[in-house]
Image (cartoon, rainbow, N blue to C red):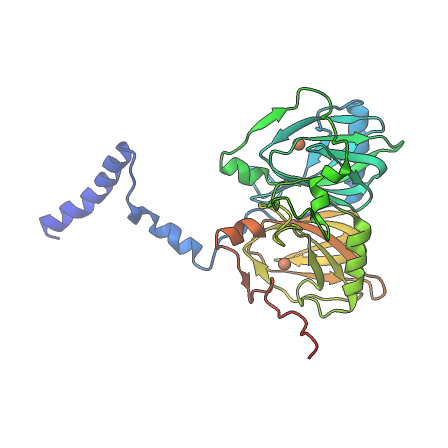
Amino acid sequence: MSDDIKKQTTSLSEFDNELASLNMRGQWQYDSLLERVIGGPKPAGVPYLWKWETVHEKLLEACDVMPESYTARRNFSFMNPGLERGGTTQTLIMGMQIVRPGEVAWAHRHTIGAVRFVVEGGEQLYTTVNGERLLMEPNDLILTPNWNWHDHHNETDKNAIWVDALDVPLVLALNQIFYEPFGETTQPQRESSADYWSRRGSLVRPAWEQRPEQNFPFRYPWHEVSAQLHEMAGSEGSPYDDIVLEYVNPFTGSSALPTMGCNIQMLRPGFVGKSHRQTSSAVYFVVEGEGTTVVGDEEINWSARDSFVVPNWIPHHHINRSKSREAILFSINDIPVLQGLGLYHEDPENTIRTRPLPPLLA
Ligand SMILES: [Fe+2]
Ligand SMILES: [Fe+2]
């Protein structure tokens, strides 16, 4: 070896050290990392199932150990055992909250966006979001978007329970968390429902007003969603997800929130889905039925009110184990974030909004 070459090989590591002392790093040090990401990212976290029996039991125990709660904190988050930095997926945190009869969870707001899917509710359960009273009946979905004041009220005579999903890991990663208490237990409610933003998300709206874009209070009543889901039960559907409907922003047709997409899907009796993987991650709540979701090498056997997680970029498929009963899954995903950044895709084929609409009659 010539003295020149020897000088070069010994001096590269010295040079790396010298750069490090100056808070710099050569791109050549990432060569081994590049080999690890050929074929895409390693899934963040693992598939996991939280059984309703256990979750429900712990929710009731939480009422014993915490007889009163006014801070919206009698809530468990589902922690993915494969994610060191916390969260249910790398972008989403899903949890379950219980509010006892008569309780109010005090008003506050934050730059974290949230959605709530009601497990046990009623006509006297509601969340006020920016002054709008949103009813929470079983299987309703309500939005508490980024920076909207919200307080929860259980005026029923039973415990109220809902699933919530928040974009905490994403907003934390971006270091964009703001939080503010309202300062009083509850915020004032608008006197007239004619002023509700959510009233502008129906078939007609005031022609003299600007069009809202995003981050407004909204309720998706189950009776309407369920009716449409069942109306479409005879459609072709998706070979991966069967009859899957997106909750949409009623003004723009885009996702329910900019950071979170929500789906309701019916797996018809005996449905066995094709396997695919998506760059997105998703958390699921089983509304009804029994089935299996195969995620990588894991079989997740779910039944009503269970919750489970499908991490990003891991092959998965859904099976309805019943030959006579439908299964219904509610899910939340981070597809809108990835689509906004041009990073969303599926393997082996992109299926979201790719099929032609039903043809018009000639
Ligand atoms: Fe909150
Ligand atoms: Fe999927």
